[in-house]
Length: 275
Length: 327
Image 1 (cartoon, one colour):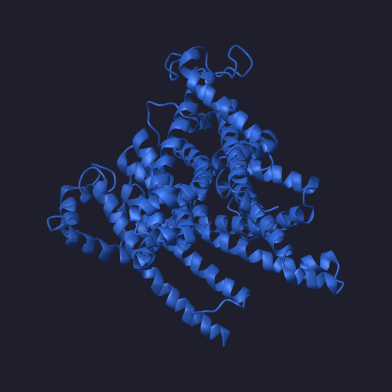
Image 2 (spheres, chains in turn purple, brown; image 1 turned 90 degrees about the horizontal axis):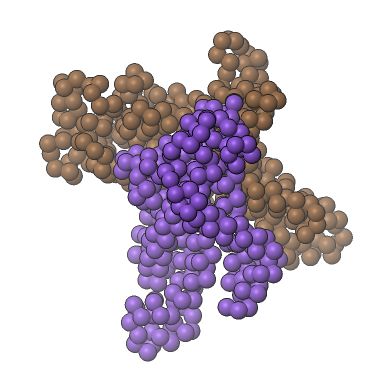
């Protein structure tokens, strides 16, 4: 682990990503301290440009954009992580079963996975939120439902190769049960790949969430970056900063997560390292 | 010979797609059941716009008084025969509506597909050939940025710069409606409108394919045949052009085929931003009008489209690479 940490810190972009990500997390955590009020509250005159009366300006209803961006960070990080955790659990369960038991079950589960990969996933997410109603819960559900397949495929591959390794064969010959082999011996060995893929999935989840809330498919009571951009769209001509600022926040966060994910990949899977 | 083989393969693949399509229909049915109100409420489109007689007729047609299994079969029968219902907001049947919006979407998708694969292949091999030099670092930086940019935001920022400030391109739509262009002027007008939406969507996929192509070229460079080519005295440029490039392109084409579904999803956002009159904008309008039935129809049609695109890519792939056996 220590050497892994060393390898990670030698990777300069990954360290930059980690610092940016930590800043976003701190901003989200302290949103309630700096701006305890409602981020939807009107605080001043509308259409104030950035670096004037308000640090990032105000929107068309006179809402402070700093408050919006800080509170939006909360929603984005929450939705991104929870959806990824759910998708990871589903993907590991399906991929693990398919890879470990193989045969007909594998065939069936992989058909199912392929089906979900064929579906235009963003349209499916839109449909799910439209049917379930726009709330934080349904947005998380929709993102989780569309993002588990890559995880399932990865875990299946790992389980399949582990299944035939000597140490697993030894466990089988010792008469160890399937549950114990899976949870004590195979799963810990696949954990590093799961963590890497999972970290990159958070970035995708955030992009989907911002796309959905941009289209107006977000909880009406929670501030989110996509929502600010979607509502600022109609005044793009006169007040471009309302769209530009939250978009930059999304860009930075997603980029930071991707860089950290790449760094983790280098640190945790040195064998997979290609040049 | 190869054409006859391909035809057999195409039929076999089409048959394979049948269960996929059936499961999508079942999924649609499930979503209908999850929606508030009964299926007839949803199928009638906007609440309150249908007469009680029409509702009763709908309930009878879909057998809503019968067990769920029968309902599912009836629903499947309707959808398979492309009877997707009627949209009152648009005053057109859903199938007609989808067909009328298909062209612009295909135009946008095809442009993005071709440009991003071609340019991605070029930039990716450029980066791989100049590994760890400034070209490689520059391209890597750009891909990292483009990969993290939300598509809709990129579109809005391009509008701010190129439409509002510079005035080079129109902000929205596909044609200048009042101009009534004909012939080549019309083509030029559409192309002019196409630039920004296509560029927006291309950025993301370009980043993806560039990364993929870079890795693929690097992998090919470590192969034995490259050593052989070097040994017989070919220049680096010849090796790349004649040998490495073609082999490295294959995984990129496969990936591009797999991404067809994602491309359609991205089109929803881009078409919404630029008011490009395709399926994506139709989906947004349906969402806004709470026309769930129309949304389900679009979902079904676009899934069929993806299945079809995958089939075409598979066939193209087998023609490109004779080593792949058709079965």
